[in-house]
Amino acid sequence: MYPIAAQVISTERLDLLPLLVGHAEEMAAVLADPALHTFTGGTPDTPQVLRSRYQRMIAGSPDPAVSWLNWVIRLREGACLTGTVQATISPSGHGPTAEVAWVVGTPWQGRGVAGEAARGLVDWLSRQRVQTVIAHIHPEHHASAAVAATAGLAPTGEWNEGEVRWRRIVGRQLHRSTGLGLADRQGSNT
Image 1 (cartoon, rainbow, N blue to C red):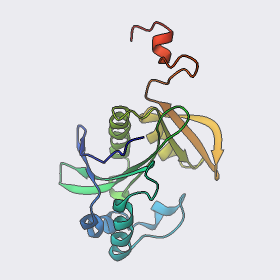
Image 2 (cartoon, one colour):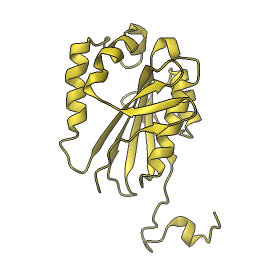
Image 3 (cartoon, rainbow, N blue to C red):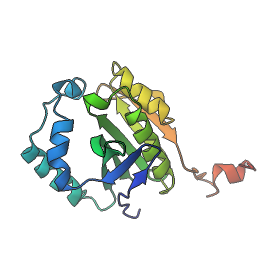
């Protein structure tokens, strides 16, 4: 698999900007509400802790087959950061798989920011030869489940560490015996 780098992704109202260490100060304020940790655990990070974390994230995965991609979400109206999206892309038997996650600061929740950002991310991933997108969502986190559904993911019934796995096939999967894409085998006109 080839390394994939985060690029600017623009949607109707948002710009997903590749993460920089310099985002730590503003993001510490965006993520300061302890309620954001209800389903994930932990507490809000200080700007210093975020700077250190962002340095590690930007350095990338120690595994050259895995790409760590991280963005901040900028709402163009107001020119402010509102949250983050991320994707970890790994090889799998059916082509590259991206595990995605998102978080939007409390003041911007309920305004469609997370759904729009997640849709933009999943659409971008589909153009990067990613075959499958997955997310792990706490079964009681209804807002995050709605974001996943907005991005075209569906619950699988599979569990991972107390969370439900959601999945969306975005690429053309290869049939193991012929090497042809399933659409090719089925004579699809799509």
